[in-house]
Length: 186
Image (tube, rainbow, N blue to C red; front, side, top):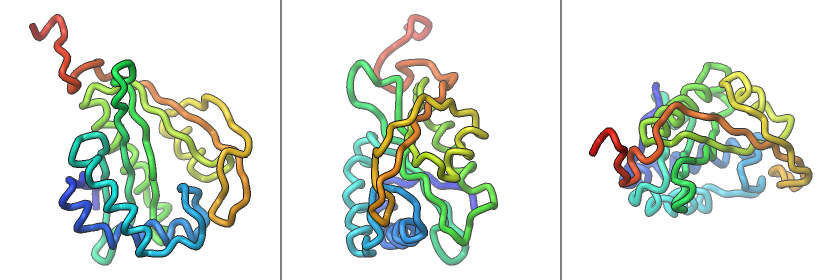
């Protein structure tokens, strides 16, 4: 199924299912900011904690699912600083281990990129564990490697790894959905 953008109510309704995706993905070795001992209750609480940011429009979350469960998700975090409203960050792109290799990660990434462009974002950034399969995904999707930071974060087992920073320029127009008017719309 194609990714669906979740509003705050749907995020809360899917928190338990999203927690299952998160715990399975972390246990599979993905470096998403959590350690291997993450349990479903803590993961669900983390997802529920995102609802205010979704409600306020500071965060957008997409989920994809098959007939049985949520199989993937991605988030887009908008910058609230006045000098950075042209940029956003891709976060928590994950695909369930059983759903990998079918183009779902690319579909999720595309959904977030398109929404960012529609919102007037002209620059996207992200970071990912250096050497992970995600690095190749971002490169194939046209992202530019900006650099690597050593010992940035631990993997789920607690081992330090470097992270690679990426960026992607979009064709959007600054200010489109940020309360600013352009000269052509006045």
